[in-house]
Figure (spheres, rainbow over the protein chains, first blue to last red):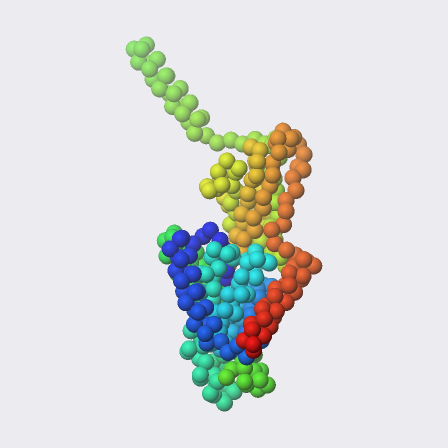
Length: 199
Length: 151
């Protein structure tokens, strides 16, 4: 889901960096430094998830774990995703340094939206079926929101990307379903074994 | 009358010439193409991905574009010496840049394909080491922040 270097217009690169910097400032302020190891753990998970390829017909994609990150870290998702994306760009050549701001903004804001929409509901609910269902929806929705934002950034950079943007959203529907399943498993396990992670 | 026949013949010949000029044809080129294979760090082929070729003379506008085949292969025929770039990218933002240095000797020696391409993304053990390095860096950073915060 990373946008490559050299695709976005200057305006969208600046927009991405502005949104990313604002999110990073709030995220760092709101992150409990005593729980920084948790942030590091999830950042590592996100960093490594990009190496897990999933075959989707003739194409393939990789996990993002956007929803679990948002539900566990809240605003702290901004610094966690930023570090992971920076290392992915430097070590694996995914995305790039100039486009890092846009990529960080797109992925972090998708996670944050999930946190705002479902965070409290999942945390407070004791109904297993409801929690699993909400976790599935949040996992799938996070991917769709991120794909939509990637498409939006591309289209606002160049209107010729409109068809590519539509394709990106459609192509991510199967991944959304897989992410929904993975998220529901992770959240169900956390609710049972380590509920403090969702507090 | 003769002049009219002559003009009619001239027109027919001219039209025929034009027709031939707009026809198509092919021959097997003696030039040796540079054939590249693109793949992900996991070893999976970059099949049917967008590919663009940039010549040493113009690094902004691609002189050739297309898609890789099922096996992630893409070929082009260099016609000048210098650094040629082939960029293959997918819709998810993964990008591989192959930089091919064409020397005068290679250009002259069309019969032999002696160009070495370099892999853009790490793979195998190198990928594992880089992944380990990344995780290590993240946790070390967290440790530094935690210590700094404790002080």
